[in-house]
Length: 125
Image 1: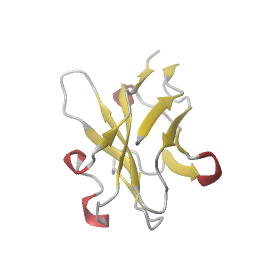
Image 2: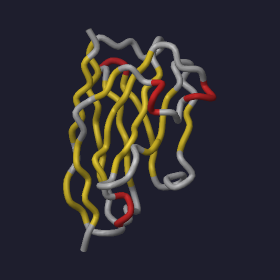
Image 3: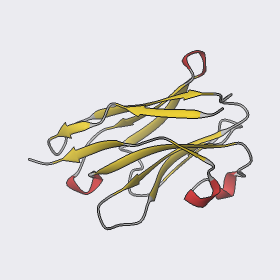
Image 4: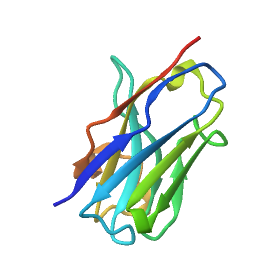
């Protein structure tokens, strides 16, 4: 059974950094696509970054150059390093996984079968 647990959220000032973690049980990284999405109040869930099961990565334009997705297979954990944070990055961040997504579909939330509970990130002065 797949279970995803996010951690690492919190409050930070603009320009600051946070690192989110997603502990994934029941997942083998080379068999699953893994992604980060976020959802701000009153907005739709938005793609942030993802790993295809082949190891290829994809980022939303809004976070390119500021966020980095990585993973530690030995620890079954995926990370999202977020630098140069902006107030518009404020959202609940979710980890997602799916076994059958193709590379071109990584950004579509409806493609993912498994979701974590989310962790709040607040960027404010």
